Length: 459
Ligand SMILES: Cc1cc2nc3c(=O)[nH]c(=O)nc-3n(C[C@H](O)[C@H](O)[C@H](O)COP(=O)(O)OP(=O)(O)OC[C@H]3O[C@@H](n4cnc5c(N)ncnc54)[C@H](O)[C@@H]3O)c2cc1C
Image 1 (cartoon, rainbow, N blue to C red):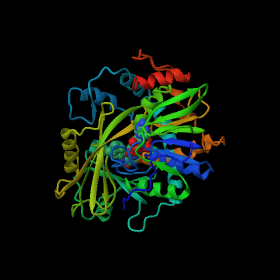
Image 2 (cartoon, helix red, strand yellow):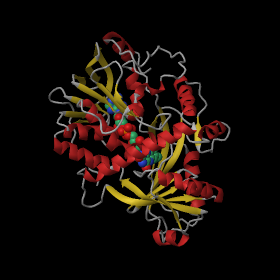
Image 3 (cartoon, rainbow, N blue to C red):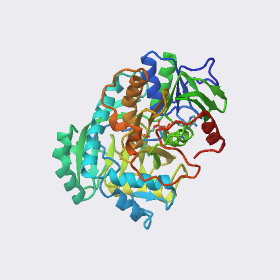
Image 4 (cartoon, helix red, strand yellow):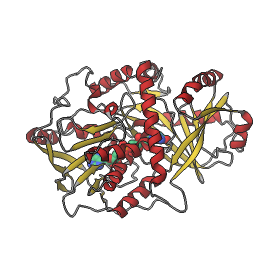
């Protein structure tokens, strides 16, 4: 079911709390803020569930156990990808200072200690989200928009499978319910699909959100709760006085909220720049391809680990998603990258019956170098909170992020330590001079500089 939730063109009165961005992160912030008793307005430049947002066409896995982006080999592969464009990570050649700085931070986040710390924090976040999701009232009778499910992790090479088996005890000790899946168990779970793989693991704790239907259902729930959703309105500037955002300039008029939550996904960095804030955020493009379900396709979710492609059955459709291209705010589709994903699927499931392609989609994951979100009060501001940087895991992280943001805005103690998500944690990066001179994170913009940077366009 994907009918659009009701949207307003312009609020009747100035909002109490204004959430900028109607993706999954913004919607969950609105949900918990409303539960905490605030008056909430969500401002979205297009519509909830619009394909331009990253929450639209993803595979919706909510399980624990995903590895941080900065894991071993990614950067090496990225640099190699400059020479071999068919590699796992495509890195467009660029001297963009922000992108170089982000890559420098990615390298730092790849140390063994940082990775271990990141994995532990990610597991805690995902467990909290998995506990929240069943409580959210988004029931749609015909098709569940959230369900729990196990997940097959398939390895094509013997070396890859052996590596995964060696890492298994540590993952289990970390709370990831992983086990080796024997061949006959795999056949029982997936009787239609013929895998050409060296081995598989089974993760018992996966949850699945159906995108974009979950967002649409959540938006309807929000409307019923009294949250106002404004569609077709783009934030294009701010007015700042002292430590407060006093006005949010939009394409449909100015708003004067008491509190502002910035949850605009990959576009958050640009908007934060207009407030003199630097967010360590880069869009990483991924693709999904949705086809008519083949008769011999998988029945449940499958992760093709070495190829980094996720397979997600959606009733009479099958979606596969993955790929990574670091190339800025560009949603164009590369036929070569799509062919690479299809090839990965064929390698693992050579007999898969070809069926009609229904949709090819590109989405921009809002990624931080350490794969942890950016959550917290913006430095130098008393009424601005950031909820961005959900990267590869936004569907799985948004529920807990929304809860933490609502606690912060309400001035209540947070359910968990939020210091790992501080915006300032990357402030030790080299500061390449930026055209237009965006100022350091700790200084808020004055009214005049905020207006000036708005006039000059994005930094
Ligand atoms: C191929 C692929 C597969 C994925 N699979 C998974 C998965 O299995 N599990 C998982 O957990 N995650 C997955 N992800 C990641 C997940 O989709 C993202 O982390 C998540 O959608 C980010 O949500 P968001 O709300 O932060 O951003 P978005 O969904 O992009 O929302 C931001 C919103 O802000 C709006 N906006 C921007 N600028 C403005 C403005 N100036 N004024 C008003 N509104 C504005 C945009 O229109 C947009 O709707 C996948 C991503 C991709 C690309």
